[in-house]
Amino acid sequence: MGDFLNVSASLTGRRWVGPSVEAERLAEAMRQATGLPDPVCRTLARLGVPAEMATGYLAPALRDLLPDPLKLKDMAEAAARILAALQRRERIAVFADYDVDGGASAALLLTWLREMGRSATLYIPDRIDEGYGPNAPAMQALARDHDLIVCVDCGTLSHEAIAAAQGADVIVLDHHLGAETLPPALAVVNPNRQDEDSELGHLCAAAVVFLVLVEVNRRLRQEGVKGPDLMGYLDLVALATVADVAPLTGVNRALVRQGLRVMARRERPGLVALSDVARLDAAPTPYHLGFLLGPRVNAGGRIGAADLGARLLSTTDPSEAAALAERLDALNTERRDIEARVRDAALDQAEARGVDGPLVWAAGAGWHPGVVGIVASRLKEATNRPAVVIGVEDGIGKGSGRSVTGIDLGACVQRLAAEGLLDKGGGHRMAAGLTVAEDRIEAAMARLGELLARQGADRVGPRDLSLDGMLMPGAATVDLIERLEEAGPFGQGAPAPRFAFADQKIAHVRRIGEAHLKIAFHDGMGPRLEAIAFGAFDGPLGPALEAHGGAPFHLAGRLEINHWQGRQRPQLRLDDAAPVG
Image (cartoon, rainbow, N blue to C red):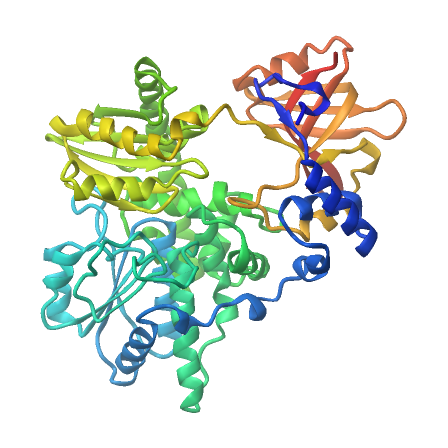
């Protein structure tokens, strides 16, 4: 396949790649069969949607896509035990991870129990003092005062800690990769258990918790009792799914789509307060969940009090919600400052070590363990390689890794732990965490590189820019963008449609702040289209377009609706550009 519009190296150094011949053929067949706009057909064809399923795909019904909860192993035992604890008025504790998925999972359970007239103890470990997941002292203490402990978004690898919970039953609701043996819990509901064959491994923990509540509600109905309306819980599931970078395909797509509608109703005090401090003044999208709301929920677990996020998501008090949201917003600003310092040092170190191998990594004394995951994401984005960043304190390294599409990082980290190079490690395909002795970091990273190379991580090239086709500025209407959004929501595993605008004249250029760029462009025949490029002046894109000198450019990006003072206008989120010729 040739370079799209003959762009082999754009202003950002990327090759532009257009649709395959097969995708073009499918799109044309779909257009003839359905009468849908060509850009919509191109998007659906790229997503692998057959023409006969196009109409149903554009209006997914959650009831048609939601799997039977009993497909998951131990689901019956978990649901029955939670129901028994409710009916016997037992003391219940929820032990959760400190990230968005853990906080949302905890909030789902706490909200459901509260609506059923019961309260539960929330326990979230301190990232620095206790680390990820259940630990023996905490589980022992909880077991003394509770009859049931539910571990959410953690626990699958916590054999010793769960064994320490003498006197209480433990249920694990998780999605992280399991080992060959399961911990001694009453039930482990996890689509990524090694003996699981449900094909639901793409679910985040909050989605697993949601399925458990679906099953508990079903059992309540059989007893003539009406449970809470779980559709109203989907805002939490959507937030966790996007923030945990789960693929927006299959049931995940339906969960997020419906969850965004629920969130737009502004009924959950915590998310209302969080949206307000983040100055979110439009209907929420996956971008808002992943880049505005998620990082603020995470900020408590990263550098503040670990339970702030879960408390915010579960509170019913608007005043408490506002106070928690303000605190998380302030912590998020502090987190960004800490992250910037660690990121600069990690990038320098990784570049000195080399970024062409199967793994990019960096380790440093005193690097805050709360930001190493974000910095690993930055390294991954900058190099298109799996990345690990490790903070070292008192001879122990605590690290976090992020992977690229097609490379299973979690399995490799788990293998490393089994081989004894790590004190502990686990995760899933796209993200992993690890603990390693300082004097073993070099050896562990060398071995991790070997394992990743077997999956082809060293052969991943520079990221191409994939395009769904060409448009003229006049075709980019609000109506078309709304039709395209019906094929969403877009995110991990389902990239947003991206179009090229060929041979455009730049009519207006304006710098916004230090790093952003706004332009208006046209093709000489139709109306202008406005475009915005965030961070354009952090690289070559901004300077080149600012100094266009009347020269024509090919432009590429994603269409969106700009809401301003009650008006809606089409806008291009500019990703890339290339000089014509």
